[in-house]
Image (cartoon, rainbow, N blue to C red; front, side, top):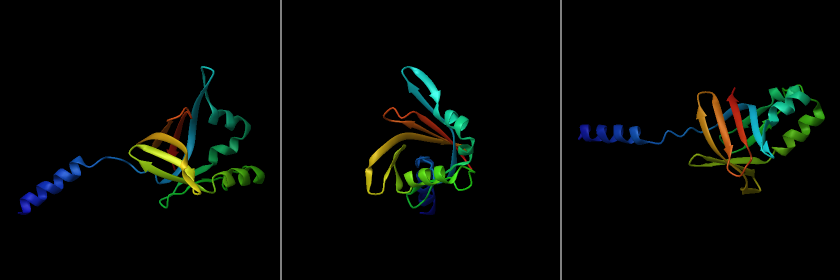
Amino acid sequence: MKTIFLLLLINFFSTAPDAQVPVGKWKIISHMNEFQGEKFDSHKALLTQRPCAAKIVYEVNADGTYRLNASGSGCDERFIKIQEKIYSESVWTIKGNTISIGNKKAPGIGQKYKYTITGNKMIWVGTEGQGTITYQRL
């Protein structure tokens, strides 16, 4: 009986999906987009205007909230307030390998991305042309 239970347990864990949950603190290292056939990195463009944005932290919290934290970025207060307000009611959900980012008042409406996590990198590929965002875990 113990042998059967052990075999069932081993079988369950060997066939369980290897999905990783993106809970944690991340920074964006690139946001690739395409416009009129030209590819560009909008995050790199942002950094030329606001180098402080390199220190912005994106928090994917276990309670389902998705927040931008610019408090330690060194950006000016007005920019910080605007950016943090934009993300102040953001929530996330996962279905399979798709992460959806929406608003807590309308969680089903928002952006959807296919995501993968490899090591300390997370890549979101927009399902509706939003481009590809690459994050690095902090």
